[in-house]
Structures are given as structure tokens and as C-alpha cells.
Length: 282
Image (cartoon, rainbow, N blue to C red; front, side, top):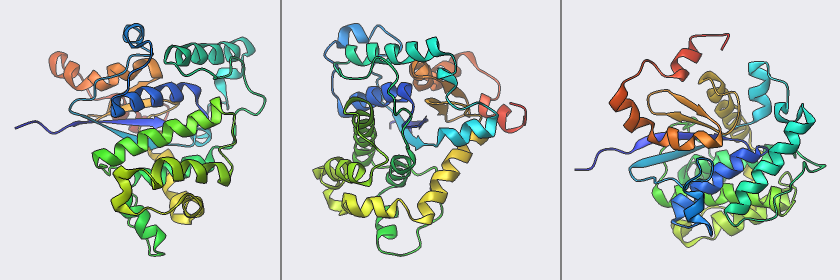
């Protein structure tokens, strides 16, 4: 009998370029796709496509502005120093080029960061599963926020592609993901129409945009952000593990996904999240 899958939470924000790389790596892993330069990428910690056998990744969209405010961090810390901001976009462009995804801007776009609230709420809504969306669509009161909801495999794969396509639209196609028209098109193309979710009869993109403005969704997305803060998350991307440890940054993804194997061998004290929840200064 196979053991239960290990849970790893992926906390991300659509304004975060490094979250974009993590989203692409997970999309490749979940869809069994291969990067054009897979052999070279597999030797690089920031580009390696992970093996997700017996691992379940939970997608946890957050609003990074709320996180920064809660932890006392200035907004856009990576661009407060101009040369650091320039390096950030060069670095992400380099990694995405290796993945065969050209077009990411090599310098900071004039309109970055864009308004990511709508995209974040739609991703959060999708992360709650088909039944939540159908209840919301019917006009009934949705259930309590299901932050620990485990999605079916097909739905997780759809979630992975939708998240990646939003990033692709934002940074490579230079589209405004704060636009209902843009987000409705992405939902139609990668959520409502794919055959693996046809049995759920999810609403179309225009309706999904409307549902994302419902108070229940706004509060759920806000609660997701607060949960991240309570766990000690201070930036994106961040990965938290089943036993309450935390890994920050795209280059720490493999450690996060291997955490359950490593900690079983070396042993460890309470994870970072447990300590953060007991330390108001952390």
C-alpha cells in the first residue's frame, strides 16, 4: 500500500517574477512537459523541474502588499536599490530563456507591478475546488474557507496551467491582468473549456470574473494572505511543509519538496512556521 502523499504549500503572488519561475517549474512537473534545455536546467537549483511523485502541491495565492504591511516590510524591496531591481529582471529573463520561454522583459517594465487583485482572487477561487465555485455560481452561500482543501489531480493540473498562463499573459504578452476581459479569456481557455474539467460544468470567464468580486471570495483571498502571515511568510514564492517548516525563494523549491525525506533522516526541531506563530517579532 502506498503512503499518503506529502503536502507542500506553494504561496505565490502574481506580481512576483520569481514566483513565475516556480509556477513554470511546477506546471512542467504536473503536466509532464520537458523544457527545451532540460538536461542543462536539471543541473541548476533554480531551474530544475521537480519530481512530484507522492507529493501534493497546494496552490496558495496571496496579496504580497498585505504581507509586507503585516511584517513591516517596505513595498517592492527588490527594487528599492536600482541595481538590484535591474538584476532581478535580468536574472528571471535568463532562467525563462533557458526554459524556452523568451519574451520576459530584461528590465523593469514601466507598469510593473500591475494590479493583481482580480487575478489573485480568481486563482484563490479556483484553489477552493469545483464544488465551491458551483455553489457560489448558484447564488448559495459557499462553505467556510477551505484552506486545507485537497484538489483532485486533474483540478491541480488545471490550477497549475491557469496560474502559469496568467504569469505568461502578464510578463511575456505584457497584458493587464487587472482587466476583466483579459482574465475572462484566460479562464475560458484554461479552466472552463479543458476536457479534464468538463464534467464539473464550471462557469465561463465572464461569470468567473463577476464571482471573483463576491464578498466571500474577497474575504477568502484576504484570509489566505493572513494565513501566510501567521505561518511566517514574508515574501514570494514561499513553500511550507506538512510539519510547519518554511522555504523562501524559487531556488529553495527542491529543498521544500525533499523536506519530508531529509527531516526523517536528520531529525529536527519545530519548523519555522511553529516558531513564527509564537514570536510576534518574527
